[in-house]
Image (cartoon, rainbow, N blue to C red; front, side):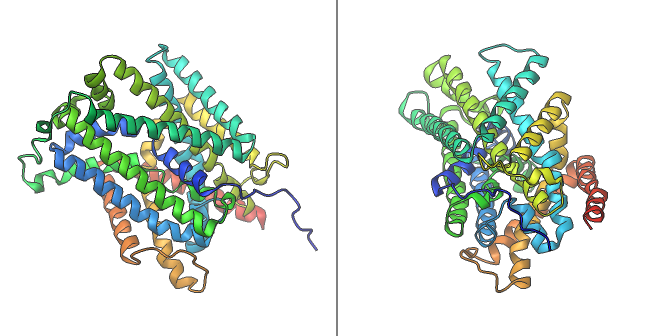
Length: 442
């Protein structure tokens, strides 16, 4: 008779505040400083620009409302890996976990680390080789920090998140308090073109907004470490999404008030342009500091949470068994953290992270759609499963999110068929590995 597994387990130590700050901190990275220019360029009117942020936030909130049900019902490590496996079978859970570990999360870590280092160049000029070295060092630093216990990683995330929220709130308040803004900058409210001619540009603007909102699902990856998860998991997902929607919409309004949509469309960093107009050249330096805090904090959140996916896969015997080990002293999946950090550094050094992430955007939305679909599937397959929280507006809310995700995938296929095909190929490359693992385990 096999002996029970006596290895140490992950501990439930994350409070509602910790969980909310992990999500907020992961969502707010460099995108909010870059994306407003892209949205303004495509929307071409202040009302339409702000509307894109509002609609993108509502779509993200619909996803959060749906996923909250799964998080409360299955508060386990791995998040989407767990939901897809239980709803559609282990092969789909594996394909998601494979894509998340090989590209989606690790390429994100690499890309954000490089972005952090590039903005660091504002104060300390670096060449291309030095940018990669410093980016890898930042990944090593965050990985090491998260190896020394859950509470240290959570405390670090809380500090980063409060700082970046304060920075965004400061930009919003100063935009309306200091001289430089004008109500006239809100004209035109809408572009002169017909609505039908704007459908394509609005779609591109929406993709940019949803990229900025991405990260609302991160806390589900550490579901087995959240206290009172039946209550705190869905609340943290919803609270964090609402907080970020409020900040993003207000920062958009503030930037339009200071700069106008036309000026925003031409700006490299919209917030820096606005700050420079309000307080002079030092404004750009202050915004750069805010970006450094935002990118480092967001990466800490991804490093923290994403390592739980290969850990969960290993516990289900779908990945290297060593990845499922928990440090007896620090109670974190240390091997998974280290291997994740090493792979992210390899992607950084190779320079392939950016292109790889572009390829898998299509697949990411496929998994988002399937995860929201899992709410409906499991209502049918497992009607008696305890559901401490049930999706508000079910089934309308998950269905609208799924339809929106399908529209984004179709848009990607039409606009970038090569990227969509390569992304699908990267995901499907996990199939032979899945069957090999199943055969080996059997």
